[in-house]
Amino acid sequence: MTVFLVEDVSQSFKNLSPYEIFEKIADEEYSFFLDSGCDPKKLGRYSIMGSNPYSVLRSRGEEIDYVSGGKFERIEGDPLKFLEEKLSEKKADFNVNIPFASGAVGYFSYDLCRLTEGINLTGIEDHKMYDLEFGFYDVSLVCDNIEGKKYVSAQGTSEEECKGKIKKFSDKLITTKRKNIASQEKNVKDIESNFTKSEYFKAVEKIRDYIRAGDTYQVNLAQRFQTEYEGDAWTLYKNLRKLSPAPFSAYLNFGETKILSSSPERFLKIRGGIIETRPIKGTRPRGETPKEDKRLAQELTASEKDKAEHIMIVDLERNDLGKVCGFGSVRVAEMEVIESYANVHHMVSTVRGKLRKGVSVIDCIRATFPGGSITGAPKVRAMEIIDELEPTRRGLYTGSIGYIGFDGSCDLNIVIRTMIVKDGKIFFHIGGGVVYDSTPEGEYQETMDKGEALFDSLN
Image 1 (tube, rainbow, N blue to C red):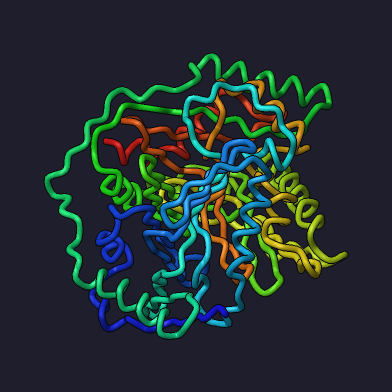
Image 2 (spheres, rainbow, N blue to C red; image 1 turned 90 degrees about the vertical axis):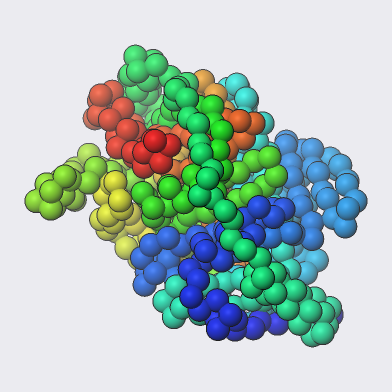
């Protein structure tokens, strides 16, 4: 029998912000912080954290590693099927007002497209990321950023067991001191791209050739930056969070790999039988003055090029959701809304649908991953061109980070504005959608505008 319990622990942490609470467990095994860093009234109401999962699932291709109770297993098979099986073992209906009570937290790498879309990846794989990596957590803390409340939840086989887990986790958060970061220094060397500027220009022109030939309408092209790095990843995340707060941010301390995300984009949210995606397509930099800022936002609103690009992706997303939703239920709830972030204005739409009976989260991942806003249209052909033109595999970039609850809910971001700290290096990608009207100079400058906070956080 599965038992679930949640306790209001607001009084114990009333003077601490979510990130100040997380600092107490930031160094613990597989600690995670799903950080809604801005706009609590719309997208950023809840922040979620936890550590020390009872099991961990990782995969590359069909090679699956599963660690539980100190026991290691290596299995050959479909990693998404295996993930679904493990989620179903503790399936529960939580019926609570917090978004996440217990379940899996982690990431899907873009390279999982080998499984979901059958893409034969040929780029250099030097990042050594897994295709997917999730911890399974039966205890977590949820912060309500509107009401200022904090809740610890636990799942177990009895109410007594749940109470014990809640007390142990709460006591640890209360008694543990925050990280001492005052003396921690970072050492950043030259930042290098996997494209030269002229190579990037040539890649944009090659995409325009493909569009002219009728192969595709739009392709997302990205360049990857990397630098050697010595320093504290959590400190770097705080720099990034300050410079570029975003509603779908995340910090994952997954062993030797630290993931620092400041993503403004939702890939999939599923709750109560409703599925939602929020594609971003269309960008302008923020202005130096209020007048210039307003002009740039209005320029984005009026841009026929950006609107055409955006509509292509909205149609693609409607088609993807239609694979798992009831006939006629897919609707565009918001269209071409301008959202403003620290360094850029974005054009965003919201697409929702009602899931068909019996459709699972993993069914939805298979049908829609990776998100169309960061591939192009038509989707498969765009991904083939990405593989041809980008020198290295994307790894985590344009994959997804988030949670999948044992109750069948999920909230997953699109991995953009994200750094990976691994093996003494930092990796991050910046990209944009190329259409026929694109210019190499314009596309290159857009990547620099989008990456401003990432570059600044390293300085």
